[in-house]
Image 1 (tube, helix red, strand yellow):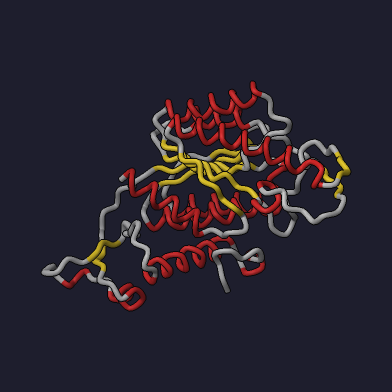
Image 2 (image 1 turned 60 degrees about the vertical axis):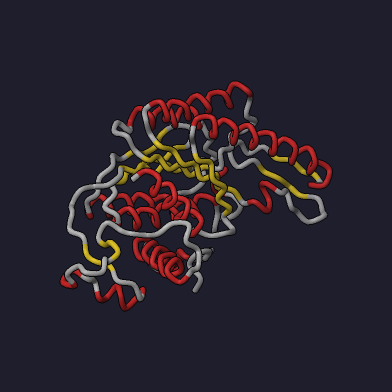
Length: 305
């Protein structure tokens, strides 16, 4: 079973187990891969140096990876990470069985599994038109269970026509996360009929996060085939706005060029502002699986520690 991009992961057990399967598959792939852009060295282990005592070698890990790792024993937390999920109605696209929200939940759960391996503290926040839930960053097993329980609630959450207020939510999160953290946001970065004032509000909120000395990654979660490329069959469609309920019957080809121009302009401006503020904006196509998310996090983490 390919766990990097399995749209039926929810059929295979609890979220904790699934996250472990995704991460272990990812790590195994890294050890087998010729890609050497970064290495995965968890807090519990470091590469064994020739001449050291063999007493602390993890032989089980050697059996799995064919590499010698020595066990580490330090107890400190390395990083503080705050996961922020957009749970507005647009995140339920394209379908109930697998959508942007479920992709974000599985990605967040997989990151938490990595956080625990590296003794990084983590918290969880999620928002629609307001912050609906926020927990502080901790690194205990009890906290992990608590956060996984909240993520599992999101998997069962029904869409209620909830709008998005990115700016307000991010301002609140910037105030709530007191200690310097790595803030990881999963959002489609979409608001209904976004105006210039709303867009400036989002940029102001992102600047607020950076002003508070946080490092920020935004995973821009989208179905690239439909939402970016507007790739629909050559026939009339009945479109329904998931946040407002507004309906439109139209042939996609008649509006495709205009849609693509508006989308590209918005994304270009968003990318420019993120670069200006030192924020990592990373495309997360729900059709490409979870490994690119884990890889991007590890690259960012490698620059911070």
